[in-house]
Length: 224
Length: 79
Figure (cartoon, rainbow over the protein chains, first blue to last red):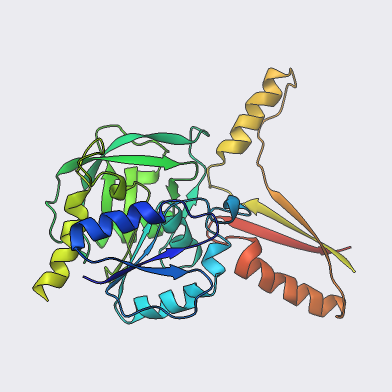
């Protein structure tokens, strides 16, 4: 699987993401800059976590209007895989590639801890190789992770099996509606999630539970 | 000309910051504050267009960047 990671001013998880992708896919991801207007020939583009533009205006709002986003929108429309983690998820909602919005955490504080994630759907290109209903450890680190959408949108997400990940066993850290931690677009080729699977892939980290997620993405391309 | 854009959360959208401010006011002894909702104000200096054209441009700015219309409403005033 060929991948690329986009760096914005204020991104801080791009190297973690590149490390995880290289570790699991065996290929070094391409580095893309926010001002680029085209993407390299890849299967997956990742918008990593961080604090693009200092979270000014709204988290991810300025980055969502960066030059590279037009190329990402076109890539997604062609069926390319787009993953947004944390700040990347916020960018995808701000860019209109995913529905809803990520609001200030219900508890108002920045949360940096481990949660238990449930793989709630495998009906998309990212989690198809994971086990539905299985729970796994994953770290979160965010201030604006409280997923919100109107009742109609939530019904559409739930009815369409588009909630990829949920906070399990009372570990919801932010008040997110229906314990939503990650969602996909209708076609299943754009996924946004608040937790950081890229930080649980290496034996030197507290857990390697995040590997299964990246392995699942890679499997989709190994089979093709 | 000067313009002011006010962005507020739509009703029904939870506002944890407004709630915290509400609690803060109560803690200071201000009674009878039934609700606080926090919003944003943008003051803009605009030149080279009529008030009507400025209003149309400001609406486009709100739709494209200043507000997230999934969760926020906006109001435009030409001052």
